[in-house]
Amino acid sequence: MKIASLVLGFALALALGLVVSHDAEACQTAQAAQQTPALDPLSVFTPEAIPLAKKCSFNSDCPFGNCKSGQCGGCSFNSDCKGWGVCKGGWCGGCSFNSDCKGFGDCRSGKCEKSPY
Image 1 (cartoon, rainbow, N blue to C red):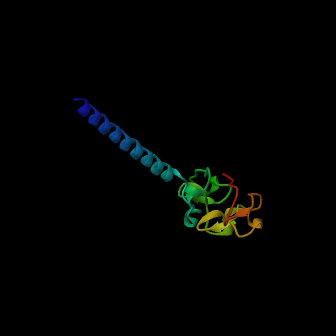
Image 2 (image 1 turned 45 degrees about the vertical axis):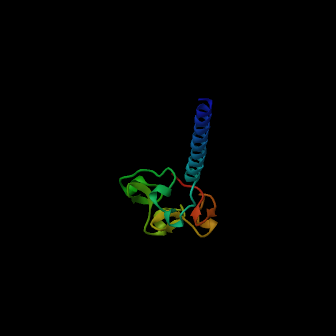
Image 3 (image 1 turned 120 degrees about the horizontal axis):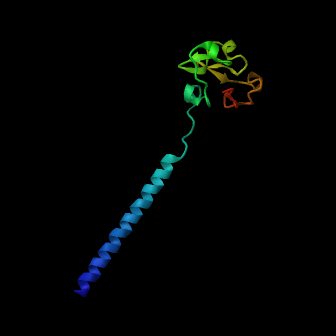
């Protein structure tokens, strides 16, 4: 009887150890998934990439860029951006030089650091 209790206790301890080990691995996997992925350069100039993009219905709603997909910042030409960088990928805020940004921060990784929105 004592041996059976001892074997049962050992089996429960082993099972608990496996569960704790599995939970630790699951936690590490979840933490790895929560880390910020590298920025895809093709997604830089999308409505989602524009911080606090202003909602719009008409081009006149937008002080910088045109109304595109319900958000300000769209463009077809550099002149659409009205000083907020150059038109790149259909969105304002692109740049090659600091002078392209004119008051919207420095040119970093092909886009102006600051957004007017």
